[in-house]
Image (cartoon, protein in one colour):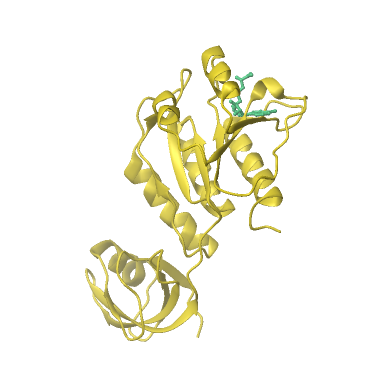
Length: 239
Ligand code: SAH
């Protein structure tokens, strides 16, 4: 029996393991999706793979599922982070959703000189990441970090993680991703682009590679999907 609904739960999963639902999850399964005792739900928690479970108690505000069999082993996306400058709300949500679908380990909103927004709702973005993982069949949910200043992030950067720095100044020029294996991050700037100081600093870093995303200037959300596609086809798990 294959479940129609996939749910992320923050609890251990394993053979015969009961899983108590939160109020919101019970409302979703039994109020919105009209599920009842005996129905199947696929569960994942980011560490124990995917489990087929069965509803054993269905209330308005509570419910219990029991894990029956593992349907997918745990797997992780490649060690790729997405660093991006948050833009307008809907487009930022889009970037987080697409990053999860494309397969990243961590999502890091960065504040650059020309970043449009000074605040993000980390909890909302994390909830979007969970929904995207539920929808795309993933068993891993990347952490969405708090907004960090780009300068501070670079100050304490671990040099073994390379940065594919998407530089709009290279539009139409060559700037290719090289195929060094190992941990990477993709960096996407805001609508206003990078400042001269940021460009100078990034270009001087050994572990940052300036890359071009073709002859046209892409919007930040398009650029994020394009860069992750490029990385996944060159170095990632699309091969
Ligand atoms: N306002 C800027 C464009 C910013 S686009 C200008 O007109 O020049 C937003 C971000 O998307 C950029 O900071 C960069 O990271 C990425 N980007 C967009 N088009 C790109 C391209 N052709 N090559 C590399 N990066 C690009």
